[in-house]
Length: 143
Image (cartoon, rainbow, N blue to C red; front, side, top):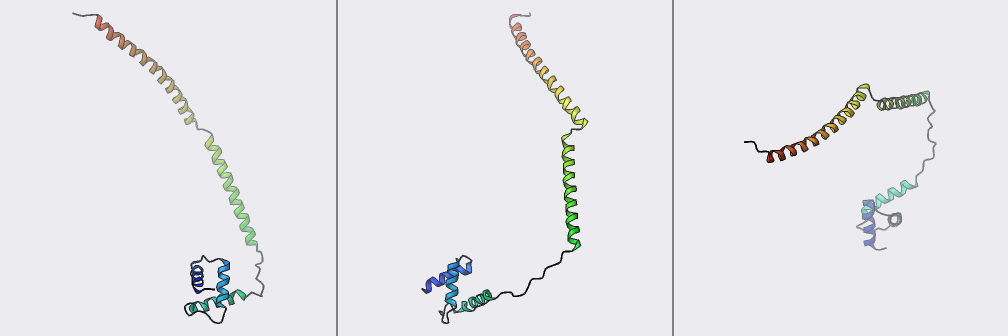
């Protein structure tokens, strides 16, 4: 393999963008006894990674016995969740029902809207009266 290509693979490897095939090529190259002088500084690194990959753990992992405290925690969390759910449901149902003050205010708004409509009709009638009085003033001369 060409050295320029290996230099590119090393750069990609340390940037975290090398593919598995490129990593395999680098591992094969650095496992050889003779390496290019410019790449010799990376040989110990790749040898260490290769030796770490070969290591396996032969023992058993310790298993924690279940304790009563975990069970109690689970029950406490469930109780808090149920309590919170019922509190939010209670708040939602109370928000839907209007208070007596809100009912009175809505009724007041309806009456005010009705009065406003009647006053607007009366205002339109006054506009016609204003036109009538201006027309009559032109024809009736008061001397």
